[in-house]
Image (cartoon, rainbow, N blue to C red; front, side, top):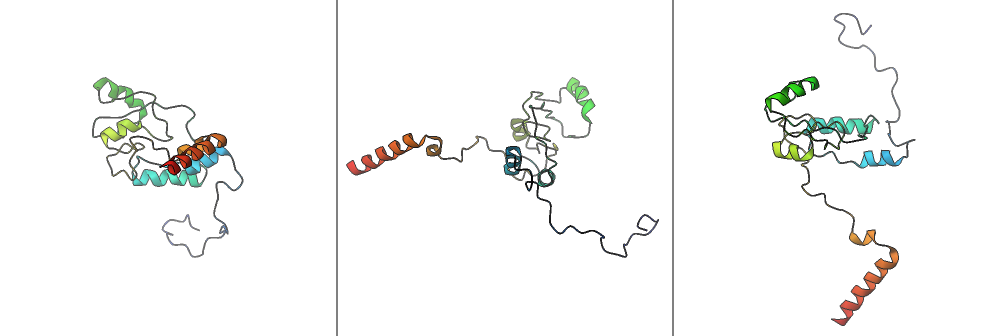
Length: 166
């Protein structure tokens, strides 16, 4: 048996092998699943990014229903204390923000605090951030796509007449 003391190696292959990998959107075609799959995990270290991607891949990711409190710590000993000690740390003045500004799931600090302290927004460790936060959220959609079709056609017509007149 595999649970015997000292029996480290296995003598047989795995008994049941999946023929198809798990797809989190195979039966769940909801809008929420599409948003979760499209989410970009920025401002986190490599390990936290892999953890978040695993959660998304296997439908374990649960988005926040309301913003969470930011626990950005100014000391170098981040994640040494469990959550009940945050109040103790508050007495010493090492906690900075404490605003309800954390909008990403599984994160412990808000975007501005993570950028300022240059730490991972999920674990709080001072490691290399894989994808840094954008200072200003860029709109990828074109302005014309937001207009109604009749207004869009009239704008194109006006541009066309301006080019011909020149």
